Length: 319
Image (cartoon, rainbow, N blue to C red):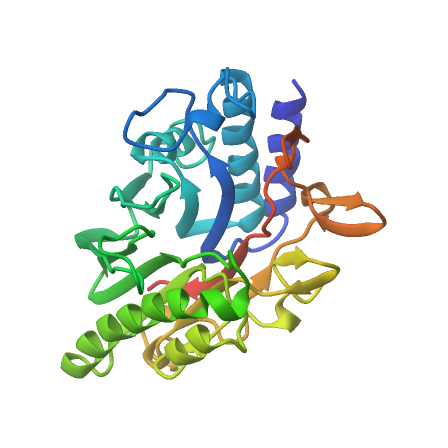
């Protein structure tokens, strides 16, 4: 009953204002199923695992993600990361009160050592999927790929072709400076894709999004920003970031777009300065005196929250 009342309130709130079409990204924080996959390092996220990851907790997580999507608005497309497989992203759509009959999924299995991937959910009425693929790369010092692929998809929105790239760059494990080379490898491969598209089509419409595990001032995001325009800045949110670490907020979750999407033109376009970091009260918690995202877990302790990241969006117009 509480869930029904929440969605009714959400509908009333949004129906009272002009609904904006949006593109978004959300790090959902460790969305694993409860089935043991012998090819993945998922043992902790099983009912008998160290996180005691049960079916009830899984379904609560799915419900939380869909609640966040409702907060984000009318999502034409939303990228996600920290998902175990295609099945879990399809469960998000299947149990959504708004997306189940209208939205499709783009996903590919990566060779990530933790067993997590990126994915994309899109409105199949407003966007026609033309093609999809991955950018796979090997980190410095490694012999085989062990990180998340960059997922790409090409869509048609009436006569416009839209390229979307979903990222989850390597972590800062070992320290920011020591691990910087890993994220730079991801950045170089992403930029190579951008160069190839923009060389052939200088007016290409491109949206590059993801948890880059880097701040806007770091080397990797700055390299991508040589080609695209960052839309998520400190002024996009109430706290100056999408992630809280060691007492400070900053931006790990990025959306960058090509110049053509910001021009005054007919067709699919991005509304300038519309980048937003969403931080309603239900997505926040107070921990040791600090206000931060309401997490699913703190260490191994189950909190029952949403994610350790806040969601980000940009507004778009479709004609």
